[in-house]
Amino acid sequence: MTEQQMILYGAFFAIGIVFLIYHVIYSYELSKTQKRSGITISKPLKNLLTYNTYAILAVVGVASIFLLTS
Amino acid sequence: MNILQEQLGEEEVSAFLTIPGERLVWASRKHSIGVLISIGITMIGLISLIAILFAAFSYFELSWPVFLLTGMIVAILGLSLSLKTIVDWYCHIYIVTNFKILEVSSSPMFSHKTHEVLLSQVRVSEINVVIHNFAEELCNVGSIMVEFDRLAHIEVLEITGVRGVREVGSILSAALEGTYPGPSSRIAGSLFVRPKEVAHL
Image (cartoon, rainbow over all chains, first blue to last red; front, side):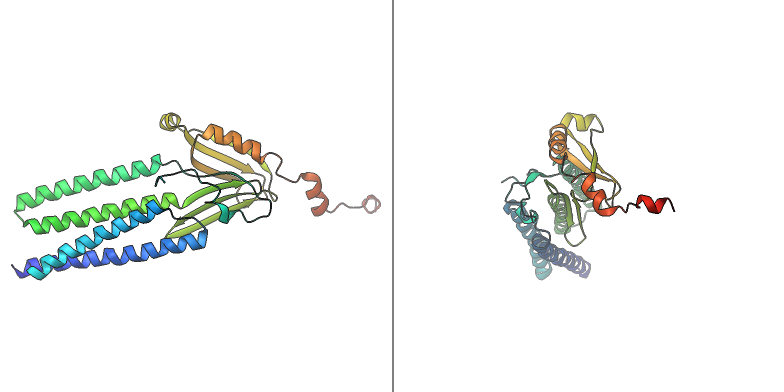
């Protein structure tokens, strides 16, 4: 495994973390929107947010596995 | 419950019915066709990008883990964009009651807009129903433009992407007719009338 590939996996891991942070803040803001504006957030929409979290976590997980095994 | 449900029920808008005796006339989101088109375009872009990446990776003979991770990053980018489109659509609602017309548009982390017109303070002069093109006619979608006299901040409130626009237009026309307290009560309280004997001086 070359050093270049390690840097590449590290970059993917960092992008995944950035996405995760954005998503957590976005979900928090969405829950605050419900309190602020009175719009009820439905269960299917909450489920969609959860699935997106899983997808981002999968990217971070795969990147970290490649990074650790390299 | 469907995620792209447009019509809002009484319990969903109960937080907005704040005036005693307030009764819901109509409450809805925009037609979901707009969201579906946006998501469709995003998905087509996503698939095209992954195909281009696949071709590039095959041509330059790069390793498959890098392709896998790049594909996953592109996929979560598309998912996040689609989610934002859905949330923005979901948090944009129109509510018409017997006392007010309310538009709430919220985009978490980005923007928030609340536009409330109290019907006791304005006079609804026109309610126009507009279907702009063939596609809208086919889907029975259109805009309703509620025009006020000059007492409101804006003169025209446009409710866009309304499903069953003709029927909703009729409902709003019937509901908003006679909500204004009438010119006599307003004029009596707001206009100064010069006494006749002063006018002769």
